[in-house]
Image 1: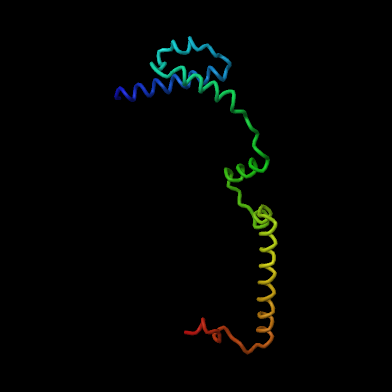
Image 2: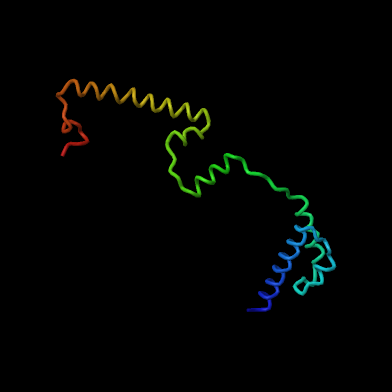
Length: 130
């Protein structure tokens, strides 16, 4: 282990100790600077930064939608087509429904007409020719 690695580990340990102390309400800078792992320069600035972050960052509760989505991603439950369709914007839902209806209206009558005539076979389709 090099000297740089040792100093970096000591700095990380000191930052962790200071952060834990600030979160627990202990703001005794002199005691924290007296720790053996305290950096020789810039400790005051780091301490002020940690205190500022502690006071400015507030906890936020995640939304119910985020929690449900995260749970599904973590558990990996398969979701159905309708579940995925419900999460889409309204315009996309309408476009998807129109596409399905148009597809059904184009395909079903052709199938019914081809079944009724009876003279077409699968080999009459050019793509299926040998």
